[in-house]
Image 1 (cartoon, rainbow, N blue to C red):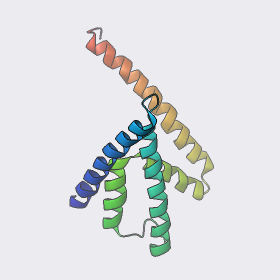
Image 2: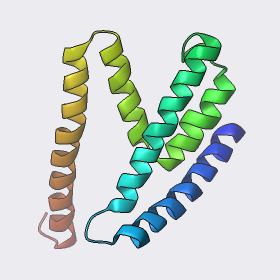
Image 3: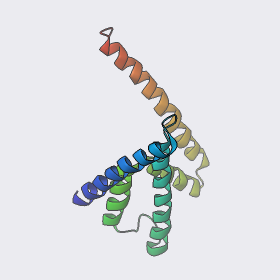
Length: 130
């Protein structure tokens, strides 16, 4: 738990400053800060995957404490988008194209539809109409 808290805390602070820097650098007419954070997180996770596979043979064989600190903790605090991309990549690497496509599209489309629906429900609740 301490490794998770340490990594998550550092990732969260990193997300705050990196996103703020991206917004200040490129403007606020698009969420550039979040895009930057997501792309940086994916890049870091790609490097970690290569290092873990090279050093330990597979991601699963890497020491649990390292995975908790760096992937679940740091990258989880920085962005969960990188985990989504890793899971999609692993499905593709195992030849599960249909599941990868379902997971990728389902996460984006269903997530967006659920957010829209829950937003509307929240509006109704706040207006006392439900």
